[in-house]
Length: 416
Image (cartoon, rainbow, N blue to C red; front, side, top):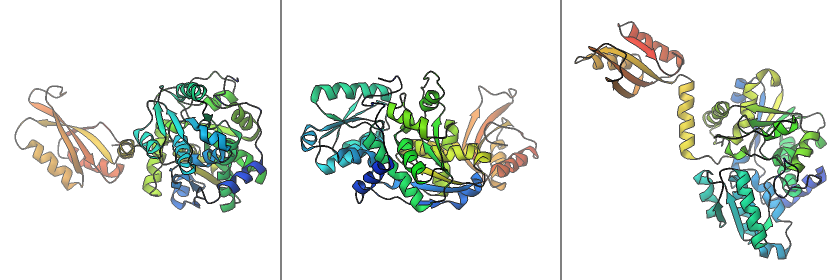
């Protein structure tokens, strides 16, 4: 087996435009032809014409059910009775579980132990048996392979299967139906199933279209494989949906032939993109789903004036993570700042500070005295005040109001 391949891959299977069109016919009426529409505000921010394909509007909130269903529909009656097994960080799991349940096929899903709870819960709610095993997808894959041998299940690979790849490619057909003159497709890359299918369909329909993959810097196995670099991945990432160690042999072959480039983005850039989707489009994106937008924002000169299609590939994000992303973005924008103020340790001093902040339009979220760890002299104290402001400029005015009244102020966060 190819060192870059995972379980179930052959490295020799081919997928054609006809396969993708056949998948589109098979999936018709069973998955949603999701909206692909322009975003004027994101276009203004990115400096290009942004079109967003809202795959987070699928029933399982991810594109993954396209490939999963296309594979399940190919099973014989005997294979359906045996049942299926899949390994997944979440979205493929839900796609397999939901459609297997609809079709009356028993399903077992092996998921890494760190999979967000919401994805585990949804997978179980669709009727699948969930097995949590391993710290990363590769370890979950090994357990799935063991269970497959033990019980005779049919393996439904998350990306390295021609039928799965063809199913994912239907995303590109729908995008080009909605916007035939797209210049670029920006596609999140994990194992490579989505970008492989999309590249095959898009290049066949429009040979001059540019297809670019996006990976996070902590998990760039496709980039490393294409550049003949040793695979070096690991660590926490908000984009756990594309946090894979091994790309597929089939998908790697297709990407080498059909994909123009791979862009790497940082986690904080993905967080910013998640926040922008929420604040501007009023839609929820998981980390992997926001990777394309992160790439467009990272390289504005590359996409300036072009018509760029983004795949918002999924919306399954833990609510606590989403809340943290929102707050962290407010800090980055300077709309939440923590100010360290030196004040005389006597009655009334704190009241004077809070009055000045209020008069300047700031909203105090938290105030903490630093008596023991203060940098001030023994007759003064530090107080750390977290303030919500309208903008970074407004935060600067709050700081100036304190300084102009004789207080020493140091901004610990934000742009002030």
